[in-house]
Structures are given as C-alpha cells and as structure tokens.
Image (cartoon, rainbow, N blue to C red):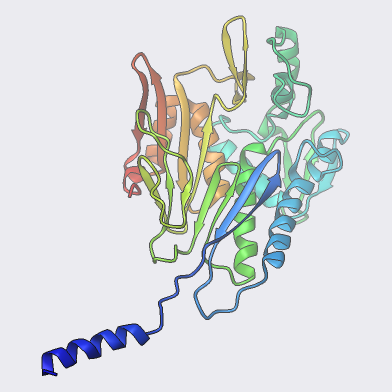
Length: 348
C-alpha cells in the first residue's frame, strides 16, 4: 500500500469511528390562555441539565395564570375587575405585576397625549369589544357621551409607596393592549429562572426571542408585508419563513391591527381599536403597526398607541423615539408598507 493510499484509508477509518455530531433538539410546548394560544419553542445545549417538561409547563402556566388573575377584565374575581366595581374614592392595593404594568401604561398615556389610555374600558365595552355583550350597531350619542365621561387616565391617582390606586368613580381599566405583552415577558422570565435561556415565546401573536437558535443565529420571525407571502411564524428548526424576516436577538415583536376584531354598521367598519380621545373606533387609513422592542410589554402597548395616532402622527412619534416600527397603510392600490429606519435595520 502506498503512503497516499494508507493516508486515505486512515482518514476514512477515522471518519467511520468518529462520534456522530448530535444537534440539540428544539422542543415545543403550548396551550390556551387569555382567549388565545401560547407556545414556547426551546432547547438546551448538549451535556447540560434540563428541567423536565412538566416543570417548564407548570412554571409557564403559573406565570400566565398570574396575569389573568390580576389583569383580566373577563374574570369577575380578578384584581382589575374588583377595582372596576369599586366605589368612588376607594383605594385598592395592587399586587405586582399589576401595579407595575399600570404605571407603565400611565406613562405611555401621558407621553402619547392620551392616544393610549388604560381607562378606556367604558368605551371599549360600549362598542361591544370588552366583557359586555357584543353588538352590531353604533351606540347613541348619549351613550357615547356618558361612557366618555368615565374615561381619562388623569382621573387616576396612584400611591407608589403603598402600591395602590384610587377609584375616582366609574373608572374601568382595560389592560388588554399591554397585559398580553407582559405575559410574554413573564413567561420568558420564568423560563430563565429554570435555566432555560434559549427560547421563542409567543402569546397570541406577540413574540419574544430569548438567547439563540441551536445554530447560534438569533430567533427569526416572518413579517406580514403587502404583496409578499409570510406565515408570520417563528423559525426554530431550520425551516425558512416566507417573505421578509425579522431577527430577534433578545427582542420582542408585537402587532396591533384594526381588522382583528370588528363589525360593520350601516356600511361603516367599526374596529376594536378605540381612540380614547374620541371614544370611537379609529377611522384613518392605517391598517396595522408592528413594533420591535426589548420588552414585549412595551412593544404591545406602543403598537396600539401608534395605531391610534395614525399614519402621520404615529410615524412622527415613532421617529422621534427612534422606534423600530412597521406601518401598514391602506391605499387605492392596496396596502403600503412603511418601515422606520430602526425597523429596516432588523430585517434579516
């Protein structure tokens, strides 16, 4: 046997007896919460201890259950529902995270000039998009005036040291546009506490990428873009999402749109997104807004605020704060996408 042949044989033998490379397995858990679905895709490096799936599920469901018990307007015994029923001048002590979420909502209400308002509950119910029965007709002018009189974030008084809030009388909190995003953050926190640092968390379309995929790249999610197909889902196991893709290196993404829930009355499209400043559904050309942020809670609330502000004022607000946001606007030719510079930088 020549030296060359011997070398080739030796290399072949080495390859044959070399241990096979084992790729980490991406697992997935899922379930129901807040009237929608949740899912978590996760993996652990080879050779590291991983908690049982039952423990992970229990921790995830506990985090989600806490949000529902504290902030759901559909649960009659939640902390939020008890506040909404409270008599005028009643001070209610709030648990964390409810108090922290409410404070964040009030900051955004102030900064957005009331385009975002956590006290929008009365008009949301009036239009049939809250716990009150659904409707298919517009409320009367008198009904709208009465509901609007109960809305206004400035009416709330909070006591930070005592972690409590005062019911001014007739106020009804609705944290639906921020609580789901917070729930994503809470699930991610629960996973990290159990040593699970690489995961893609989703609750009802709001997502947060934690750590990395097994190949070392950031988690990726497809973006719904006019004229291009996208499944809108995350890529955790090598499948290529269709259309533009967002890389989420420890970032969250949330979308608010005016067609997710609506009804048509006398030919008018009545969206579930209510402008707290008017008490009416938004009626401009902006169809949806997607926001990327380090916190899903912030992405969720900001997407709603920008959608209410509209294509011009919302765009100016996003540019001023250098937000990564995608505005989808209706036009005579269909839909037009307008990403901010910060959003474009994230496209993979």
